[in-house]
Image (cartoon, rainbow, N blue to C red; front, side, top):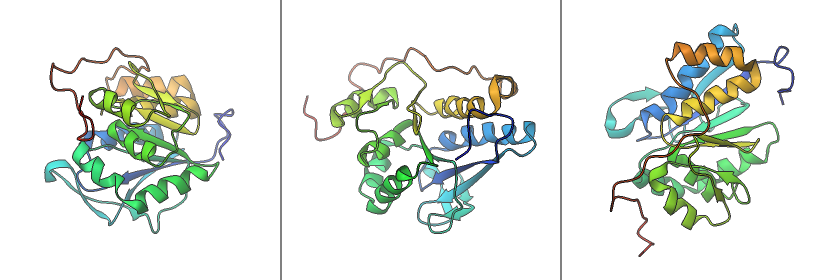
Length: 227
């Protein structure tokens, strides 16, 4: 695994972005933009590629965009990071039923060389695989109460953009994937590179943020919850 204590002598850092039908575009586009800029600023230190869950052809949420992934789960190269973007809860509930995805997450988590990053509701996929048990994690504020009730072995952290548990990073809603990606760049390339990307994106990077409050009566609850 790359030695993150030595920011100047690391090998190439590879980031696999897992894609599936009806994925939220911003959940993966934001992190890709961060790593693309990091690649330019570090003369190729970062390499990002996309991985299709079932096939290379992916349709984003509401079929707004068709993407051809670089690889599938059957043939993608080894990576340092695997980023799993989120989707609407109806899509997430179907993905939770996908035993091949759950097995993939469990298997990749076993490797000491791989870190897994969730964006938004993809935290449910990690929680369902059991790899967040006993750890701190976050998710989209709108589903936070449901997540906390459904996964009592996980310590939900509110009012943050991301939570870093070393081997697993969970980020909250949509654009927080940018913060998680900037955090990774800062870890490997330092605050100067991180700051340059932050300014280039005209973004305000941070870890802590007071979450919005869902309108009365609009809090997400799974069908299993009755109160």
